[in-house]
Image (spheres, rainbow, N blue to C red):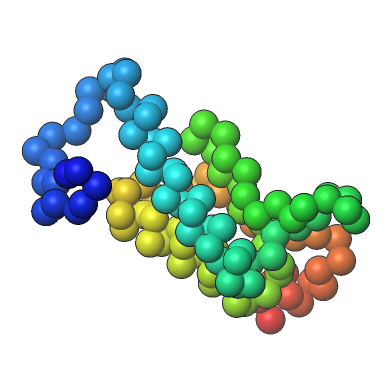
Length: 117
């Protein structure tokens, strides 16, 4: 209130499906996810990928309810992405549907690394 945090908001019920406020709340929540990804990039915990030599690295692409996250194929960066998503999930209630999710690797990533060896 007036620029200062003021207690917790405890929701009593959700929004109706089709409520015009719903997309805006989704965007506000997603902004937190994006801020955490940007912070990890600034701290050099994520590097993203480049699609051309002189292009900026891309760490994420979001469209409607689809999300793509890009990182180097190493344990540290994978853990960083999963931690960010996990924290976001706890805060927002949105969860990954692993039945609709996949992991893809670049052609230069060795097969043992793809298997997690």
